[in-house]
Image 1: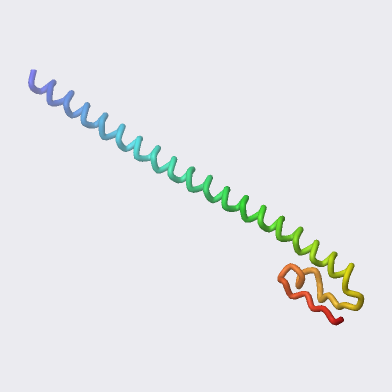
Image 2: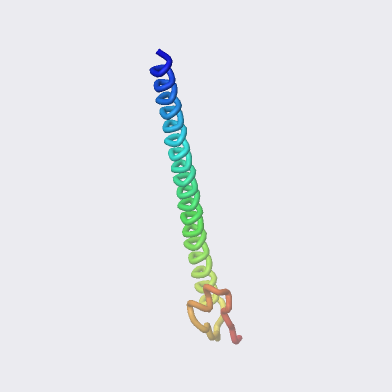
Length: 88
């Protein structure tokens, strides 16, 4: 009968809408996960860069101690900021 057809049509519409909403949520979830992954990668790269920078700073300070006889190094922190002061 027509009433049944209308009802089943309505039910189908609701199913489709529900499915679309669910897919939309999933897509947004995937986007968020993707952004989170990208952020994690950025953080890892930053950490890696920091580690490399720390090694370079340390090496410079070591060289300074080897080759400059009289020197005043303000502090290791100043070294990291590139503010090593030498009095030769």
